[in-house]
Length: 424
Image 1 (cartoon, one colour):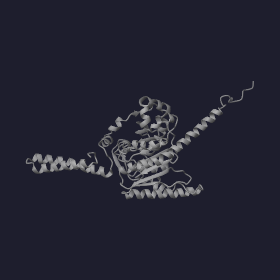
Image 2 (cartoon, one colour):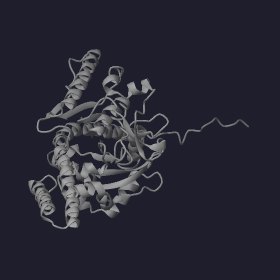
Image 3 (cartoon, rainbow, N blue to C red):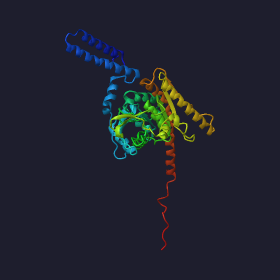
Image 4 (cartoon, rainbow, N blue to C red):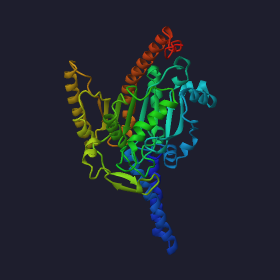
């Protein structure tokens, strides 16, 4: 009742405001009138902020709000620092030393690590969630699929945990479908809540897409026991992160097998970038593709999809939007039509009768807000994880066949001389 969206909280603010206004009216001394008038601004301001929060249905608990806004939650999440390049085996040993295997085999394990991008030269924190299966004996040699989750703006990766409740949502899914387990990777896509980089490679500036779509997946694939970037990887996001997922899915089709877009848009808007293109600089608003129409086109999914060759296998797409945001619904519906038109041509070229339709979920009780993304998250994961798990299982089976063939037919290179002996 007294949580950020609770009726009791709003009534309390109204009572406090009314009491202060009464104090202004009855106080006889000027100093007390001024004090009461100044104090009245506080509940009025909080009421306005709370109303905005309730409209977007973002923070539902005080703990989630404090954790997200202050970063206190981040300080409580264990930090893993890879020594050198790191390795899957070393990581599993290190994690085994600091975790409770029995507990983690039930609820999984969340940690954060720092990724230094060799291509983008960006240094940012990334949250990683290992599902319970990662710690179970039956999966000891399994390389898991991965879903990269991209937050909105303003926002940070902690929003997936504190606001969207991705971990309990995912655990509920795994109760019924344990074999669909995947590792969740939540990178910081903006480098600060004051920025909105849209996962774009700014010409001459910050290479945000390179960090998100190349540096992060490559780092995770080296460190954690997962499949390399490819058909067993998925990418998904909400709002700005939804645009990122759509744009990355089209531009990096060989690195992802599925893409989920929740309340995303399909043409870039103005970005909030740091002054001087230096992380930590004062943000300013700009079109990073001003004077670059070719780059603008490539980074406009609703336009670029019409030019991607039919021979290119794109990720499977899943779309969602809140019914009350007509712009979101219209944009997603238009993009879905383009996807399905392309898939019709692709099916005809492959001599197939049809390809699976593009799922489009319309959440009736919301617009561009947290309640829509929470409602869509479970269905999106339910749709995506079986596909990625099938790809991971196929990749593991193929690797096992190759290993068996090598065992059955060991190489003779060690016994064959590299050159003919010299004649004496």
